[in-house]
Structure formats: structure tokens, C-alpha cells
Image (tube, rainbow, N blue to C red; front, side, top):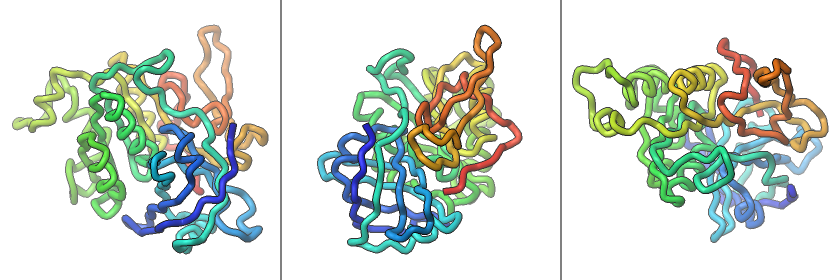
Length: 296
């Protein structure tokens, strides 16, 4: 049951290029929200912007009642959000949607083994709370985090606090592995024949423990490649999708998403806000060319 809560801004900090982390006091959402779920926020007390913006729950602490969101300034709404100061209020509806499957949950159930979390850009947001929850559940997740450069690695500090090891990949090589996060996944993780002559600790430790489950969130093209990687190895997984959402509760059909044909050849559609945003990797018809990226 989605709730409407007046969240109080505690801090709103620029943590990377055009990217902010906002800390909010929202006890109900902090208590009820699960990894992969999202909130639908009215970012200003004015009538403009009219529509709410969807944000993944970046992190949450039920004990303190705090919720964190990670966002990149992309337009009017997020531009106004970046101007919020401590003590300001923001109307938030949530938690909404279907979150990630955790060990111990209903089928399909990822094991408590070596799951890998693959995030790109601000798509890392729902994977941070997921990593923290997996560690708390006794699992051993590894996070692969990709960005254009080190100036865009906004989540490094919070990832370090989850207890899960993470490895960065940057396109310009300014931090971590040079290349995409999928390059990192393919060439340095669980590869039968690592390309590098001197594999590091990551390769040696991972070689004997292939991923049992893959979680991913980020650009469409990245997730398409991750899905292909998982399919080729028979590895189950889940993806968190982004979309423009007007209502956030499945009423407006604005976020309908095509799924793969069923066993009977029937093509179906799902509402990302209500049926997702998390879907099984093998159910989504990804656009390998990139598709349209949602802009809050």
C-alpha cells in the first residue's frame, strides 16, 4: 500500500558531476521500503513541475528513519530538487513497485552465493541498498560499478559502507578498470580465459566461484549486454528498469514496456511502475541500441 509522506531534508550534497545525494527524514518509507522499490516525489511546493519524479531508494535506515536518494540534474524537476536545503520538505509517495528478490524470498530465489551487481551511472542507486541488504542476509555480493570517469563515481563512499566489495570501471581509465562495466564483467570476472596476463586477486578468487545471480541497473545498452552475458551462461538475474512515470501506480499506462514473447508466442506488456521496476533478466526485451533513457 503506497504511502504519502512529508519528508524533511536533512542534507543535499553534490557528490559527483551534476549528481546529488539527498538525505531525508521519512520514517515510514525508511521502514517499509525494500531494495529496488522507488518513491514518487513532488520536488517543489509549487504547481510546477506538475508531475512527480521517480527515484530509486538509494539507501535506507529503518532505525533512524532516514532515506537517501541519488539523482543527476537533468531537467527542471531535478534542478529544483538540487536547490532544496535542510529543513525543506518534499512530498513523497512510496514505497512503490516490485523490488529485487533476496535470498530466502519466494522463487526465483538467489542463493547466498556469489551474486554480482552490475550498475552504470546513477543506475547504481538501487544496487547500493541491495548490496547492504544482501550482506545483512549473509550473502557475498560483488558490485561492479561503471561510469564515464572518476568524476562520475558518485556512490563510492556509500558502497564502501555496505560491506560488499566493489570494483569500478571508467571509460577514460581515470579510476579502476579502463572500459565499460560490462568489459569488466566479461574480461575480469568469471572468465574461462582471462585476457590479462597477470590476473589480480579479483580474478583468482572469482574464477572458482561463478556468479549465482546477476542484478543490474543502468543504461539500456549496458543491461542488454548483461542480459546476453547471463543468457549465454544460464545465469538467472534481475534488472531494474527506468521510465518516465506520470502516476507511479499503473493508472496512466505511460510506462508500458514490451516483454519477450511467452512460450506460446504471445507478446505482452508490463507497467514498469506497478509490475516492476524490477523484472527477471530473461523476461525483458532490451533495446541493444540504447533506447530512450528516462529523465527525471
